[in-house]
Length: 254
Ligand SMILES: [Zn+2]
Ligand SMILES: [Zn+2]
Image 1: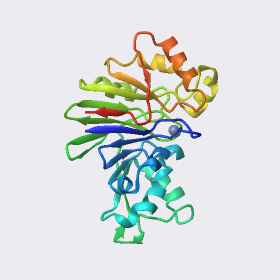
Image 2: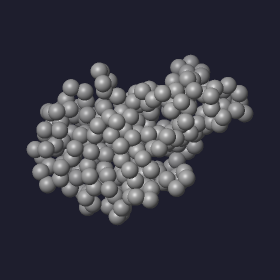
Image 3: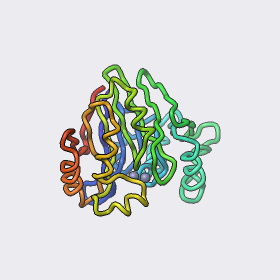
Image 4: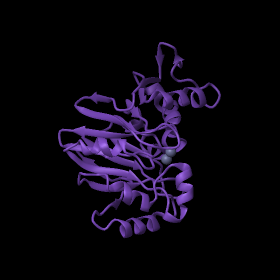
């Protein structure tokens, strides 16, 4: 299994792309602006999208993808997410006003899109690849994902602030090789960080004391313009582990 980072920024501007991870050529975790760099043929190959939560930076490319390549696809693209996230998509995106309801269009019995509820903690297997959702703690209902294949496991936090459920789940995974975790703001923005339920470097350092495994650690969702400052603060707080900045285009093999 190969996991490619299509987008890993907390915002847009210049080369920054928002959150999306591509597993092999057919599964996405989140559908941020990074998805839009894929060629049409690659877009049409995506059969499953696993969402962490309903915030726009994680879903924005999904409606456009369906409209752009839906006619070339034979079956519905399946969106996997917890009920609260699917409800937001139905009510506020695919509502016939912001965007067509592709769960019923272009034909009711041959739609472009199917919603599949994935309760937090549950796992889906697709051709030997396992994706387990793990509840995290964000401003809206949100999960991270544990992706496992024959060569170990990768954990992705999605957007979160302080959490115990995520760390408890990871501590039970002996094969954990990689951790991708968000750090959105610098320490000086701690107040905003608390409000928006993200992590800043000091909070990340405290959170990592709960982790009993030693995966390679990569930082995602940094705010554009603050990347170097955030990574500098992380290096200051966390001397014993050496988190690296996640890079767009980076790949992981499992
Ligand atoms: Zn969010
Ligand atoms: Zn986000």
